[in-house]
Length: 153
Image (cartoon, rainbow, N blue to C red; front, top):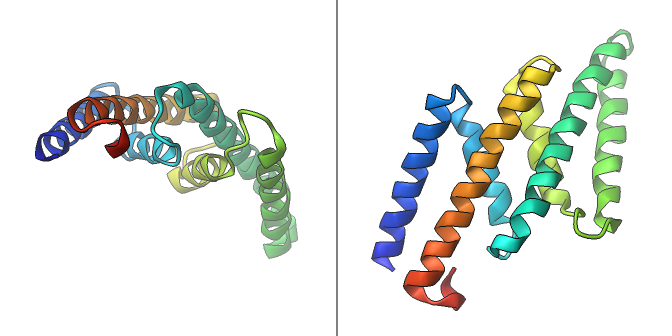
């Protein structure tokens, strides 16, 4: 188990280094890893998790645009945006394969928290860093499973 923890720490360091070298937000790499952590840790779930994270980022982007458009409404504009974006995210639970509500909220929260402008460059940066995080989580889960057995990952 100690060896698995050392490997996980090394993967986290490598993922962080990669995101920094690519000019991406390192904190978003960890958001991707957290998104993967909401699953059972199986590699086959990674594509679904990435799709949900990306769709969550898109909802966050749309929410930023909506808040700006409704700014004249003051706090009511923010409340309306939260109601709409949250409602959409919660409804995704009924979608097969891509109904990971928690991952949508990770994407939404990440976009808002980034304070990036609602632009394609922002979306690309956050999405790419999230993908590095999901891949890091996959690698960590895979190595842990090899080192400790299937029930430990």
